[in-house]
Amino acid sequence: MLVHGFDMHRVYLSTPGDLDAEKALCRSVIGDTNEAETMAAKVLLVPVGLPQDGMIEQYRTAVSDNIRQCAYFIQVFQDDWGPKNLMRKMFYLACDARADEQLPMRDVVVFLKAAPREIDPEILAFRKELEDLADVRVFHFSTADEMSAQLRQVTSSWAQAILQASAH
Image (tube, rainbow, N blue to C red; front, side, top):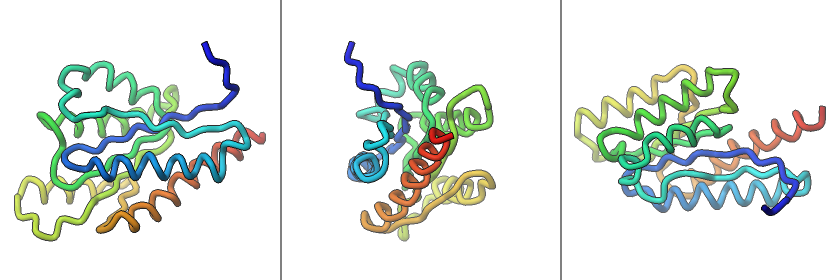
């Protein structure tokens, strides 16, 4: 086993549908935050998640356990909650984990990609459900640059909180 000495904080990435570019962007921003803010202090934000949506059906229990072990949860959404809406259930599991002081979950955030032409009432209703959540920060974006800037602020705030806590 490799001994590295880093304090690792897992970040679950949920990006159902055709949001692979946004998932890659999340990983990149997390890497940039590590490089700029946490690595020197031997702290890492570690992105985890499914490589493909369909895997959630086969590995639902493992995914649930993985989420419960994470400190942070990023939900990117536009118009698809993945197979059988299971990623919706995982999102609410993350919210429940955050409420459980025995679990490491500290923050759950949503990034809603603009869908100006969306007319499906079910998708519009769920977008509204997310926007109306009182205890979850929801960020709206249209472009990769917008999402990157918003996510950078989020990951930087996580990094600063971790570093401040470890200084005490």
